[in-house]
Length: 308
Image 1 (cartoon, rainbow, N blue to C red):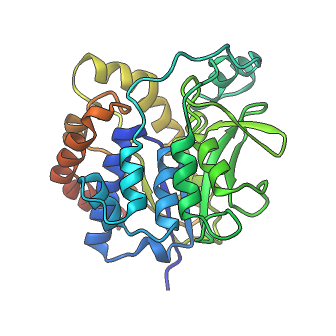
Image 2 (cartoon, helix red, strand yellow):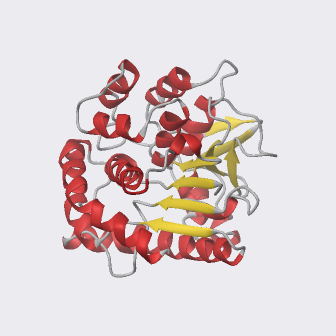
Image 3 (cartoon, helix red, strand yellow):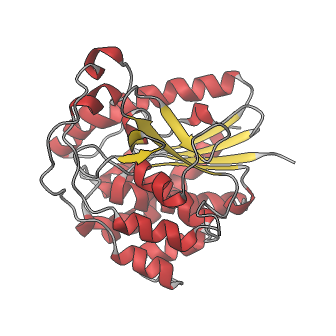
């Protein structure tokens, strides 16, 4: 029997909607059930997704939520809790400017000079606590949430062997702590921010012995020529998508060299036309999800075919 893992990358509100559409289509085309995953790893919005999957909700449940038809009070509340499209005015920069020249790859080098986020993360705490087990951690033993350690830029997958102990609430808030948007989270005496600052999905943190196959869903990493239309798409690609894609491509190559099969599902040009450039635009969430459902089937089919 194939040991299968799932890694869902960062993506904010709009990227999260696309990731759910992609996951739902993946389960439809393959018959695979995420509840059977050896590892459910998420980063930022991806951590939000695996929190729900690890709490017993199916890909269909998540799709119904995005379509505005939540099947459970927890999902109904979470949908209503979708964060605003713009952050609160941030606080002073986090005092670690040495990160500019001590780190490479992704956006980790900017963490030390990013303003401190002042957003309200209570909506993430509510979701995590509503889906956690009796010990405060995710009920599914394979759930992992990736955050970036501020002092040295190290990626930590909370829930993985050897990682600091954290509740599901702490891990989710840390993984979603977008610099300048959400506040850092202190765990075991160290500050953590959004794992996407270092890598969009941290696929290489899933061990070779843990999975023969990894499904990777990345709203914010894609092929070099893929971007959203217009000037906003050009800016998003230059500032976010291309750097994140470069890091992810190297991680996937590392994992494949270990002998693990990787199916990478990333937005196509058609997907991006429906998503737009602002992945935090709450007002376009439902529209973006509807557009994703029309295009993502072909995207998933191509990814599966390419990986054979």
